[in-house]
Image 1 (cartoon, rainbow, N blue to C red):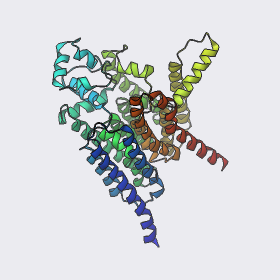
Image 2: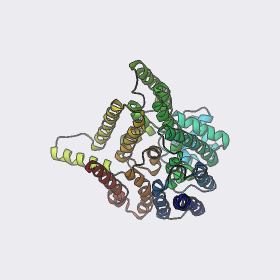
Image 3: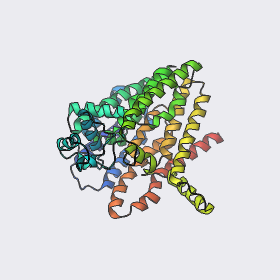
Image 4: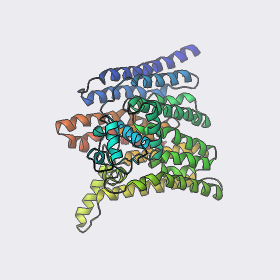
Length: 452
């Protein structure tokens, strides 16, 4: 009877693993075609993620060997090492930044276009020549970099492995993921859950494609973010603040998790942790401040008006715009006001959750609430931002947020609709095919739990 039960569980898990691995093989093959319609990539990832969505119901303690979990995810990523990046070219910016750091230049100070046009000193012009065409391929080359110092350090390490090459980035990002997965296993053990639940992150086809094939730097966030949560659960707020500061050095948004991770214990302890986080954040900000904070700063541009692949943000912004039109004399920018409201709302939510935590096991849930709210309310909902949410789903597998990993591949259709001249249709209507089912399932499960 027991053997039959094991076979019932193992069989679908093997099927899911084959789909995940097969997807990486297929996309690696298709990546050779530069004219491949983007919707095909999205459709393949969508089908693979639908199979992955069935994984939580199949994971049972001791029925899914950790060696299988780790092996499948690693195979998928190693296959992608031989692929060409599909649609995304952000890695050119990473290569440029790494070259600038290697040359002793501040990538926050000069935009690549300025260097190409010879508007800055000769060291930058020399860098353009050394880059071998990288500078000309950078997205939004009129802006200086947005990526904070810890990310810059990782780019520089990748440059030592493979100067001006993609392989170095992939090696560094894979190592970051492996470190993060190791910490996720520790987190699961702290919660008394089977380490097999790490497959929720490690087997996700979308994340594997975005972090290794497309080489997005959000992989660097994983070990620092998960490490901060583990340390907070072990009542080490000062060390948690240190890890959180490193996460802020990759992406600024983890700062909003501070009330959840360091606001615990005696006042002297959490105040020391707060001072630690403040000093690290200040240290990270110095090269950015010494660079530039004008309209050619990537950070200023992103914070001020960047929008892509969002649903709730546009709804709130348009609602505020309608109110502004009705009031007549109201002059505030609805987009900026929406951003301010989201930041304040997330901050208050984090403070409220942090203040109410009594059991350390509630920390991952609180972090998930804030991270997922940020993603769903953000003016930019890129698929690789799912890395912000997915690690916490290993510990708290919320169905609606798992569904997000299935529908995000709709984003690839935007590339084709932009080419066809219908990008506005995608931004106003198709985007709700991504986010609408997620909101519906989250609402259904919420009210179903309340009724019980």
